[in-house]
Length: 197
Image 1 (cartoon, rainbow, N blue to C red):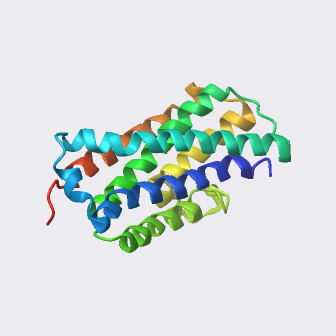
Image 2: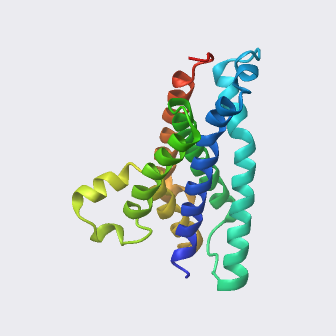
């Protein structure tokens, strides 16, 4: 359990964050409230930020719960700085939320959004090092795993929580998560159309 809990934190966040934001816009389309959304005097970027912020708070609550359960039930030793863990977690949450927004912007129904979310979620679990040791996977699978945010979060989380490593030891992971968040946010903003077609 000591090795699994930090990775499990990433898997839980991936599942919930992507799915919740993936359903956010299409749910409004299906309920008929999308007309009110597109008539609001806010830009597309402001709308995307407004969709993300509440879920960041939910993600932080999930982190606290999972770490508390790990400490109380599994006696996970926390060797590193929890503030560093919080920074990495917020970056990872933001990356997942932007993926969900991209999915929500390109789908027309909640069913499509759910299917596309699981299409992204399954490779993340299989290729990130959560289920199998990353270095023992075939090289093509490692290449695919390197472009998934969960892979980099698991490395940073295990390093900080179990080995006590600092932020300087995970600059590559931080940069990739930041890049992923930026690309996802820009893509979601560009793909979102404030009209009904």
